[in-house]
Length: 85
Image 1 (cartoon, rainbow, N blue to C red):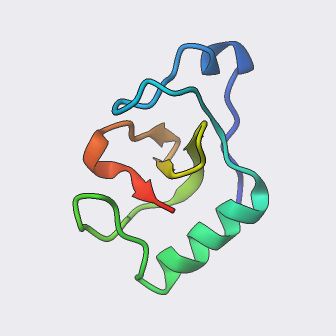
Image 2: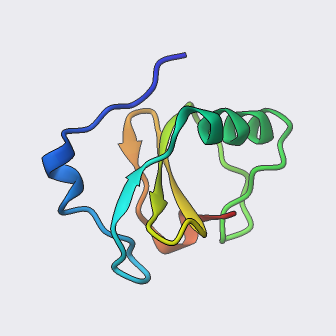
């Protein structure tokens, strides 16, 4: 499965919608964990919905408590779409 990439300069402008903390791409290990949870249908967002679609990456908040999924090459930065870790 391919992993999402983003221009590092653009990452300077993308922030958490809740706290305005910096976001960065998750490492491969965490991404695989998230994909495994998605496959097991246990990966839910803050809104309580299962995360669906092709999870190609995720952006993690600076404090490491929340990730925002990148589904089908589109980052989902809506508060309710955040996944608590």
